[in-house]
Amino acid sequence: MAANTLTQYDFFDADPARQERYMDRVCSFLSQRCDTPPLALVHSFGCQQNSSDTEKLKGMLARMGYGFTDRPEEARLVLFNTCAVRENAEDRVLGNVGALKAYKAANPELIIALCGCMMQQPHMAEKVKKSYPYVDLVFGTHVAHMFPELLYTCLSEGKRVFNLSEESAPMAEGLPVLRDNDLKAWLPIMNGCDNFCSYCIVPYVRGREKSRPSKEIIREATELVAAGYKEITLLGQNVNSYGKGLEEQINFAGLLHQVNAIPGDFRIRFMTSHPKDCTHELIDAIAACKKVCNHIHLPVQCGNNRVLREMNRHYTVEEYLELAAYAHQKMPDVTFTSDIIVGFPGESYEEFQDTLELVRKMRYSALYTFIYSRRSGTRAAQMPDPVSGEEKGRWFQELLDLQEKIGLEEHEAMVGGVYRVLVDGVGKTGEGYLTGRTESNVIVDFKAPKEIIGQFVQVRVTKARNWLVLGELI
Ligand code: SAH
Ligand code: SF4
Ligand code: F3S
Image 1 (cartoon, rainbow, N blue to C red):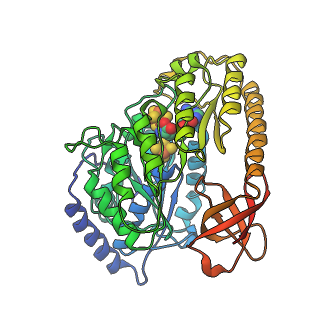
Image 2: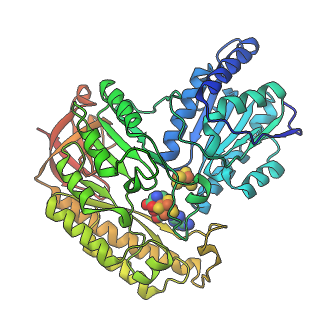
Image 3: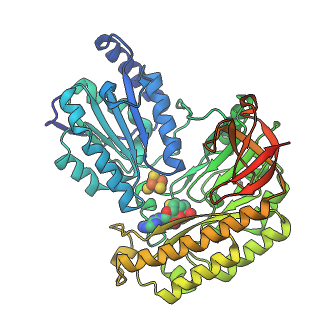
């Protein structure tokens, strides 16, 4: 591969039939050159949405004749789907890309491709262009569906190809998907984000919100249930604003009712819910739809109204607590999880204490906690940020200690109770253990024969640990 010539190929096309043709072309191109099926190493570095996109990229690769491997030395193609949400996510990607240099030197036929949120940022693509000359193909989030065409251009012309098109179209339908799990499925219902929380890069790298037509979602969900899937997670950066911009009159509550009406024994989860768009109507729908888990991931980000305003979150602590109280009233067994950012620019220690207070009130079953990471191009990146990293690290530890205590207490409160568990697979607790999850997403390990993997079973909780509970099969 001539790594020093470059094609800036910002062409955009939304037609899946065109990509079908390119899949055939890649297939015949490779079959003329490889004696055995070429192997691809594919890795997802981001959130659930990123994993779901990766399943589509793998679906296209499988259609193009690729098999899959975890070993870079036997791969003909390496594809990393990257994440830009925090600096450490980006560092992890760059570290892994750096490690590929030696494999490329040993095997010049190797194609190295980077895509996803981090690559959608022009400064990052520029950095790859200059500092990682052995990377062959870079494309952003808006053209992921054009992967076959971009790969074909790269292979057949022997050039580096970069496509950061920001052109926008309805979400591509009808492309193949190769799912990683045959029990639980991601089902994207929307893409993009219009919220512009002041710290967040996602709206810049994913573009504006686009919802899928409900009939496509119901079709896919129905196929998943027919194929034996037991859990479907509806995905979007803000599922609560589902339906905006569609011709049909539908909102997320309405969609939940429709998915719930699909016959079969399966669970429905969804993420992520933005508190500003979480309505009583939606909570009523969760309560009424028996297949929808009584668990809401409702990221609060922090517990102080001034900081929430600076974050551009559009709700107050009081409004958030009111929603939680309403949900508890409608579903006494409801559980909450949340995301929290520690050390937003200008946050004081006193304001951080309000976050701890909120966590004490909410008693989350799990928390995803992050130290603020400056993202260039966002509004918060311009704000004075006087508190040192060390200081923020101490606050962060305070939050972790509090949540560890609450999490354990919540797990202890489960002891003696009987829970419906979807059995995921073999557990790590010890010989003979299986693992599964309750409706509220708590991990339960228990001894049982492997034959019940993939089924819903009743488990009595016997012991609490920090990250999971132990139980016995009933
Ligand atoms: N759309 C989802 C979250 C997407 S990003 C939502 O609004 O809830 C997942 C989480 O990463 C966010 O909830 C936030 O807690 C965290 N996050 C986003 N940007 C961040 C940043 N710049 N620094 C630290 N954490 C961040
Ligand atoms: Fe980021 Fe806010 Fe959008 Fe979530 S809602 S993706 S935190 S901008
Ligand atoms: Fe997800 Fe990271 Fe993009 S969190 S949306 S992969 S920036």
